[in-house]
Length: 401
Image 1 (cartoon, helix red, strand yellow):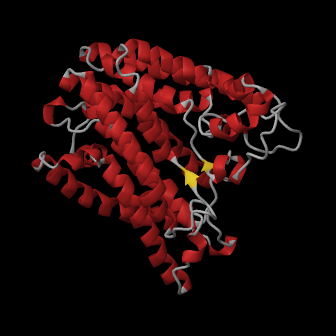
Image 2 (cartoon, helix red, strand yellow; image 1 turned 180 degrees about the horizontal axis):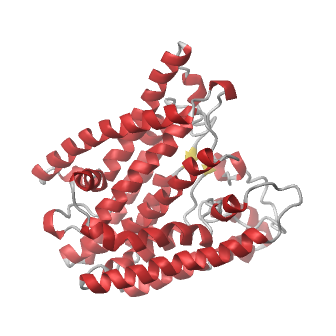
């Protein structure tokens, strides 16, 4: 999550902590939804928006991870430590995804049955790749990031650049980076996985590296903008953010208005907002990052007890992420025990894909109640950890969590 190891006090840019903390809290809605058995989106507005609001989380994580890397460079004045930190932190995140995080999701070690690569896997590898590019000028890196985002579809043809005898093997590896174009691909086999996701080497790929690496690069370039005078930052953020929203609305309305199957009864608003997330389309990223960037000037000037509480979460995002999965899983046991007389761990052996009968799913009021209780618990634990971390800068490993 936060790629800045120890920026504290006045050197922090509050908007990054506040917005990152806000989406971390929102993220927990979706993960409580997983354990409630409620589907990801649906025909009714309440279920649809319960899922939709959490789409802002991953883009904000990745974008501000790039911004935090730039701010760390501004603090140290040396790109060497930034590159080393990104490399080591990235590899640690990959390790955590495949061990601790996977266990907290599923409470089992059955890697053969189901193993997936989630947002932390993607974030870790993006940091590893970023370590090789932080030597570039921030503006250059930002431009490269935008090119990757808006030109992402060209990456599907990479395996086809290789000889026919190698295309299948290359496609399998390339599935970690971007879904390969299967038409005409020799020897690729069946790469389709759970819910239509690629499955190279038996791993279900939730988050490919491209275009997320472009989002992180764009966030790194954005960090330089935040060092300008506040009036100029406000003007630029509003122009960039609202401009992105306008582009999304224009492109989204056009796409939602054409090629509609005759039997499609999906409301127009749902078609407009239901943009492709795996991998994230250009419209998805415009829809999510546009409002976040536009909110930066507001977030920089927001104060009060609630804002301070949200910033606490934004300062220790990786600690929050690890703890929230464990807490939500355990909370599901308590709810199931009260409702059904058993914890039903068997429902969660392949989480985040959960096997619950429709009549056993929680209602939305219960989902949001569990979410609210868990967020309060997480806040107090995160507040303790943030304070302890600030008081003990000599504990080197804490800058990674």
